[in-house]
Image (cartoon, rainbow, N blue to C red; front, side, top):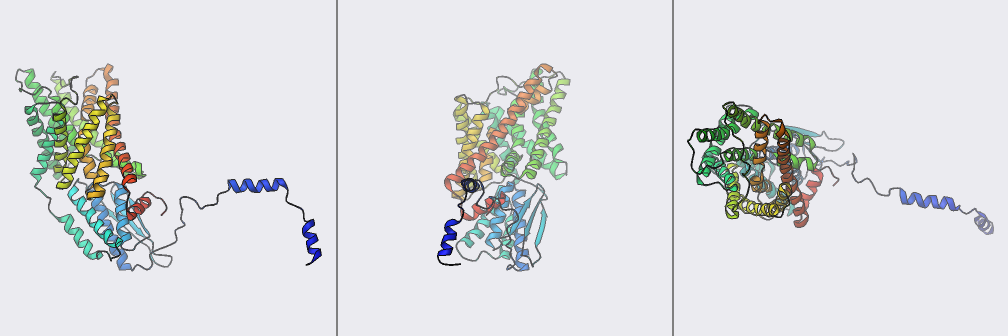
Length: 491
């Protein structure tokens, strides 16, 4: 109806009530207007345009890269992000990567009308080898960098051949040089406690024997727990002999604290564990991998306790005391301590076959981190807080040099914090537990908690330092997208 009648009906229509109007406004305020933050099962795209042969070749290359990274010590998040960057460079956008402690799986969704591809590869072994890790990361950077410039990436078959050549290349130096690196680590540890030159020699001899015994046991196929226990017993036996000699009037001049031999051996053994990787995986949300790595760290630490404890129990049966002197403390001469931190980082890099640029940078950052730690202790911040502060600086600098100079962030960060590992606290805890004195059980618990707190402070400080540096220095777009996807966030 038109005309005056329609106008009259409009004028006579009832106006909306005030209550209804306010309900509408309240609903507008409360109800969501944007899609969920995390998309669940809504991504429908696939890679149907990617041929079957190309998809299989890309997956094979990605699996080999992921396995190499996990085997050489990379964290789960870093491994997943690197694999996603690699497949993205070859035009594969729908890849999913799943990492456990012993395997890596890559899947590609190829649309509704094409069969998906999903392949798993088992991580057969683990060995800290930062030369190969750096070479793998450099290869991926070259592939991704080429695709970012608009040029076609390196042919996938050629990239696989290059990867095989990189992984099969000999180490940059012979095994005896790596063993010498372990000896330098032992020397650096005792220098942090103000020990003299003769103690340096004893610590170097102990660390050398530990390294050789470990290599022999692993080659013989001995389980890692027992290999760790036997290796830990080596420095304890050397300390036992020194204590026994002093008890019978045969003392070594300059060896004031025989317990330092055990402490240096413990630090050398702790340096090869994956505590930092376990905590980093937990922070990044890879709880299965973090749980497996954490359990490995616990068992390897128990192996150290069993090895040292067995020798100490033998000494107690012979009425020989191997208790730690209460006056044994970190610090003393700042110059000597700084040189000790440099030697520890240098030795760790040699023991893990790190490149020379990585080694030089790790030594500088280790010295800076140690200075921050000693400054924190001097200001009364406490051991754990000072360790966290030093680790924060190390984490930030490790990412900065990785971003600017393309050296492995993990290698620089790990080498720089070895000097801060809680070897003394762990030895004191073992000693107190074996003292058969119920009154000191509480002290043993305190020492164990102190050691655990130091380990968590190291891992947490490194993680926060790296996070801060990423926010400060920025990340390239491909890496940023890969990191978001590796942590399960929407693209």
